[in-house]
Amino acid sequence: MSEGKDGFVPNPVLAGLVGICPLIAVSRSLAEATVYGLGAALCSIVLGAVAPPLRSVIADRLQAPAMLALSSALALVYGFLTRIYSPTIAAGLWIYSPLLAVSGLSLSTLRRSSLPGRIGPDGQSRLGAVAFEAVMFLFSAAFIGAAREIVGLGTLTLPVPGPDLPRLYVADFAPLRILVSTSGGFILLGFVIAAYRTLARVSGRKLP
Amino acid sequence: MSYLGIVVTSVFASNALLTYGLGPVPGRGRDRPGSFASAVALTCVNALASFFLWAVRALVLSPLGLGSLDILFFALLAVPLLKFLSRAASVPGDGLLSRVGAQADDLIVGSLVFGVALISSRGGYTLPEALTASSAAGLGYWLVSTLLESIRERLELSDVPDPFKGAPAMLISTGLMALAFLGIDAALVKGLTG
Image (cartoon, rainbow over all chains, first blue to last red):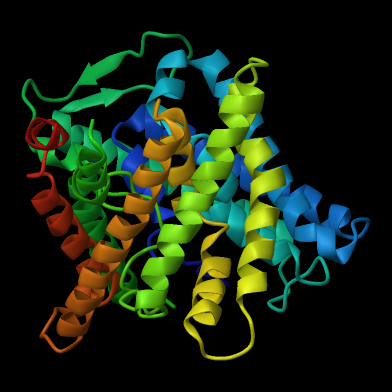
């Protein structure tokens, strides 16, 4: 996502559709979405910091597998840390924790790290752009998870450590349970992106 | 579950995209999902990836108690091998093998192949069952992306409100298709096919 002339940087999830399919599957609750988003963000930032210097010492033909192995190792470490932090959230993330290795955000960072120079054509630091995109991804994931859980189940599961996650009851019934399923996630995200586009247009921002 | 049941479940009830959210955003018009080459590529890549991951996990990692490291070994061993095979198949020309090789090369590093391989290797399947499930998952993805590509073409000719044009309309269509696929329940399939 490149910055516009007015300093506006489009949201990578809502404008660039970065990593949305696994996010839809995993963002059934605030807790799972936040922990997944944090994992994707951390993996991306670490890759953005470590990959460029590593590329200079690794032979060209070995760079792609080495970067993928690095990404997988980061996803694995994050998976172990999640298991220590909260076994319940780790179980909820299931295969999506190792899949952080090939999330849209990680792959986008790896592509960006293969470009020469630490400063992009827009004059911004590449690592800074990666970090900004990662933070936007984390906030978008948390927002989508919270929206799905509140509107879908009327609850909000907090991502705290330990096996028992506290649950806030916003409503004493499930308003729209379908939103918690993957199908509901696709539909909700379609509406959220349309709302984001409308807001961007109303405020005079230009989306790619 | 019978092999027929595994196929029907993997294509419909547990579709890789509609149930697990694996694979790229459908219907963005940059690929040609409806082609025969893409169906062959999806089936072959998923089957080979699952074969490698199943073998590494069952024969090496699980006996050593290192099953959770499967993704790392998959990235280190299977992905380079799959890349090599797909590039070897991408012989110059316009033949089916060449097109399959080119499509397979694009698919390998992605959540679809990694995710399907993880599900089939961790799902308690035997090797033939894992191969059947992963091939069928590839076909299921191909079926859905082909249907969505047709929907995208029709949406382009329809009067869709501006904010919904493109990705939002496709995501809503995908959600509605997922809703329809929810009707094919895994337990029902198991009951019907044995």
